[in-house]
Picture 1 (cartoon, rainbow, N blue to C red):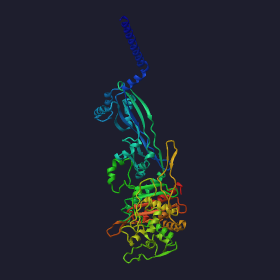
Picture 2: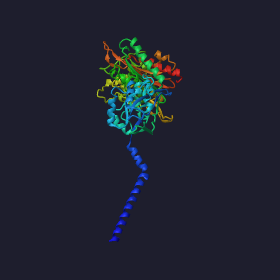
Picture 3: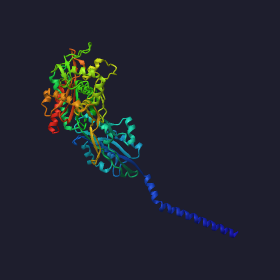
Picture 4: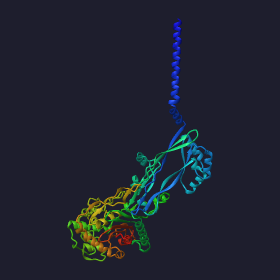
Length: 596
């Protein structure tokens, strides 16, 4: 029994020793081996963190010489840091903000709601602080103490808001539908994106990539540490073919001519002129050098004035260059001539007798004004003096579908190839529901069902200057990254080639050059010009039944080696010659710039 008792005592002693040793080992492991681990766990339990978005600058839009048209201006937004950092008191911070008239009257209510939702973060208080407000905050020491954060961001600013507002476009907050599409790209819900114009077309290139800042807050002390997780990356720069100086020149010329017509012309002859568009393109590259749509507005104030602009007479929000629809009138005649020459229906020497009335149809006999011509008229003379009878007859013999197809090859009723949405317009076809023989006669002089945009008219003028070769038009010339490297560049492209080449288009160009000589404004130009006018009738009439007309003009110069082509439309502008001063202004600019 005694031996058994001793065994039990020894067993118990050994067991207790083993348990105690295991306890000591565990204690050592916890206190020394795992000390850092548990210290970190404790630290994490006493901390919270949040992420602050660092806005990225949007890329600038510049003209062909690098002059900024639209760029980001730096503004500052104010946020309250929660909880209050060490050595600051929330009550004192709020009092200071009230004294500086920042944060609003109900900042305490906002703060209470914010704190009930998150344990740490930054409560937005104000946007677009003025320089004086920022200086007041700094003088009070709030940003330096960490009580508030001033965040720099860019706000879109047009250098000259009236330069080309419909073309340049603007940025704005995303709609729910846009957010659903853009969130996968990492955009924040409250980010602004390009909403129309070039800002929208080149959104992916212009938009920068936001960075992020991780803020870790000690729950007990309010101390903060900040770690940059990613740096913001500014957007790329969009370089346009547009020349800011030519754009201003063309805008002033069009505005001045509209005002001149209103002041000097009788009713029905231009007095009612109210709106218009003018376009100049580089014949060789297809670059759009100027694109004016009037009336327009100021990009600096469009948000405040949007309601008035949306209902304003003249529809200033509409980009007439791309989306205006106008009958070209007699400016269409070169397309008919090209089609007929290519088809062998006529030769440059073929004549049609102009007696003032086209008598082929007994029940429909449209007239010709016979301005400077009568009797046997050749194609060159018909273009020079815009003889309707000649083109009634040639158009009838050719067929509406044939000359409309040629007009389309030359750019009318066809997309221009730009990066912006445009209205395609329409031509007159034998399949039209309202088609009848008389409609073909009207279509041959650019009326009927035909309606095209000023941009298409400019493309058409360029194609005539290039013997029927129509280049794609471009607003954007290139894109460069923040280091100045070219990441994209527009390439000249031919969209169509009307048949015949110089054999067809040389006599047409001669007729257009002769027409320019009949207009004193263009005859005295420092650059030899070629043109074709149009005076398409509108539905409205004067008391005597005379129709109002638009003023339409296409042209190019210099005649022998064309450098630029242009189109001008003045709504209710009267005769096509009334648009000539606008083309002359473009020619004067090219001459002064030594670019012709």
